[in-house]
Every structure is written in C-alpha cells, then in structure tokens.
Image 1 (spheres, rainbow, N blue to C red):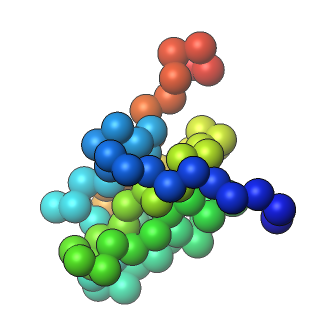
Image 2 (image 1 turned 180 degrees about the vertical axis):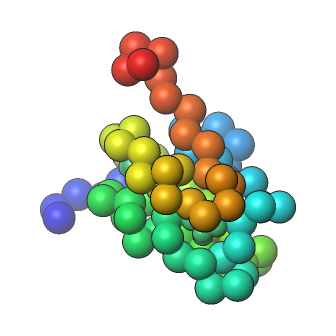
Image 3 (image 1 turned 135 degrees about the vertical axis):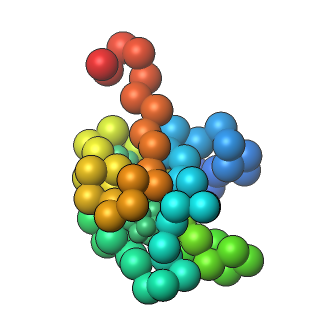
Length: 81
Ligand code: SF4
Ligand code: SF4
C-alpha cells in the first residue's frame, strides 16, 4: 500500500483505545494487530500491550470484535453511526 499513515502523538485522543489492564499482548496475543486491514495497531515495547500507532482508522471494527478480552474500544464518529 502506498501511503504513510499519521502517527498518533496523544494516545488517549486516538479513535481506538486499548485497556492495558485487559490486553493480553504480553501473553502473546496479536489478534487486533493481525486483523486490522490498515496495520494501525502495534505493541508498545515499554508496556508489552497493544496500542493504536497510526490514525487512519476505517471503523471497520474487527479489532474490537475479535479481541478475546474486550480490551479494544473504538470511538465511532457520530456521523458514521
Ligand atoms: S486483541 Fe485484545 S488482547 Fe489481543 S493484543 Fe489486541 S487488545 Fe490485546
Ligand atoms: S476499526 Fe478497523 S481500521 Fe480501525 S483500528 Fe480497528 S481494525 Fe483497524
């Protein structure tokens, strides 16, 4: 794919937020990272948990639906609901 998504500076302002208390990426889970068609999610090396690295979200939802622990929250913009 030929585009460079914008890196997110402020994690709490990202459209997709991940509850680090629920995320089991430190146990090897990579589901949300693998299902995102845009490759927006990554592992934070500091915490071992998943986070939204790039902000080009399509609000397609598999990251939230497939997360085994319900750690992923997608804030869908009002106009898309
Ligand atoms: S799918 Fe859920 S538990 Fe797995 S890495 Fe992503 S946020 Fe963490
Ligand atoms: S909603 Fe879709 S595009 Fe956005 S982070 Fe989740 S899987 Fe990726």
